[in-house]
Amino acid sequence: MNTAVLRTEFRLFGREPGAVFWVFLFPTLLLVILGSIPSFREADQSLGGLRPIDAYVPVAVLIALIMSGVQTLPQALTGHRERGILRRMRLTPVRPAALLSAQMVVQGTVALGSALLALVVGRLAFGVRLPKQSGGYLLALLLAAAAALALGSVVSALSRTTKIAGAIGSAVFFPMMFCAGVWIPVREMPHAMARVVQLTPFGAAARALDRAAAGQWPGWEHLGVLALWTALLTAGAARWFRWE
Amino acid sequence: MPTVIEVTDLRKSYGGRAVVDGVSLAVEEGEIFGILGPNGAGKTTTVECVEGLRVPDAGRVRVAGLDPVADHEKVARLLGAQLQQSELQPKLTVREALELYASFYPGPLDWAPLAERLGLTGKLATRFGRLSGGQRQRLFIALALIGNPRVVVLDELTTGLDPRARRDTWKLIEDVRDRGVTVLLVTHFMEEAQRLCDRIAVIDKGRVAALDTPAGLIRRSAGATVISFTPSEPLDDHDLVALPALASVERKDGRITLSGTDETVNAVITLLARNHVTAHQLRVVDATLDDAFLDLTKEEAA
Image 1 (tube, rainbow over the protein chains, first blue to last red):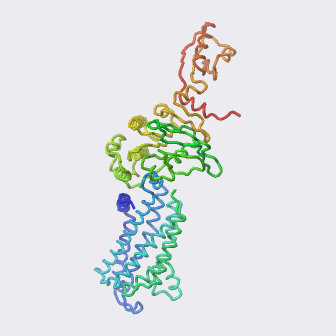
Image 2 (cartoon, rainbow over the protein chains, first blue to last red):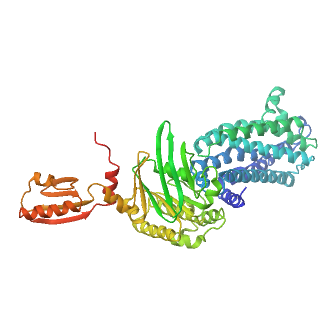
Image 3 (tube, rainbow over the protein chains, first blue to last red):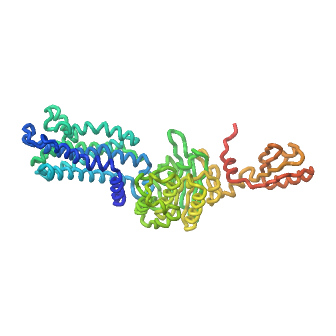
């Protein structure tokens, strides 16, 4: 890791208003919009006495991870390769891998910052309790972020151009959002569907975060699914990624 | 002078086609060494092997005794390079790029005077994406030099620069050489090669067609001297063809253009005097590197 490269990539991320909006602000904005609907602030028996807004905080957190993982990260990585920036970097004593790892740190940090913003706004604006099992929550969150970054790296590895990366990213985006429970919370899904969804990275992450928010340990099976996806996707990205 | 860049029997093929087919050359410390050749001759592939961007299929490349692939990091510390095509992050400013790249090297140059020298001082706050082609080119020249390298590889140094910037850049490269830096220059501007290079390798079809000083290349090509005049009386073709060391004869609108050597010049003057012919607008000029280049790389006539 090269700190000058990292600083530069952070600064450049700040110059992309689109990325800042979708990764950092949009998840919390969505939470605020949903929280403004009165029925979302009333306890719901089908949610085990939770209010819909309580169930949507983990979803907002996952949207941040998905946005950065499948939308902004592949664009940045593929763009760096397409423009020959990685190639120019190879002529310096700093390896182009420094640029890739800096991108991942930047995207991961911003996504986690966005998750934190959603938690804080949920707490302050709508009285959503902070996760009771905070250690488990953090572990699930970090694993989910790692899976999102690994997924983004695979998308970038498979995309020769930023256009292709954009297309693959969008194709992956909606199924991932579904699995995270954006339309129906995972715990509300029909049993058979929930079982399949829980095997996807963001379905497992949604369940793990839910349980940690309620004060339980996130569950090794969900954490295990996340860790397995991260390992597989990382191996795929390492195998398929091309420097030029 | 010790050898700094050593290329021995380098070979590289793409899809079964030999792009570099046995290139050998040795660049000495402190010289400007030119690589000249037609498009697709294998120039860029050769220097990319020197830079460690490509792995040779066969042959040996050494930069200051190091293997550019195996010792990539060590070579990168002492070799600066400008690529034919590359970009930077579009929203990175010129100043940020200079500072960033300076931070990569153990003993970088001060970037401010370098930017001044390359006419970039007014553009320090401009983002890369908003620079013109010539400004980008000058920035990449700055980035090639910023690590205070022992060896600089420049691929199409002045492409896209206006005549003023081109001359300023040539002066800069000469100053860099005068500090003892070795320069490997890929070009297809003859004027640039003639002005800057101490020695030139002409590469054609993946091989070294000739390797000499610019003057040596001109001298060794057939038709190093060109004589042209309009005779007051028609001259007999037999007399012209019989001239010694003649390389070519051309007639156009009553004007005769001959190429050959000094010996040909003397013989022409004798011929004219003997026939009492006056030569109007007589011009005797040395061939340029251009002529030598065309002669060295011409297609074998079928």
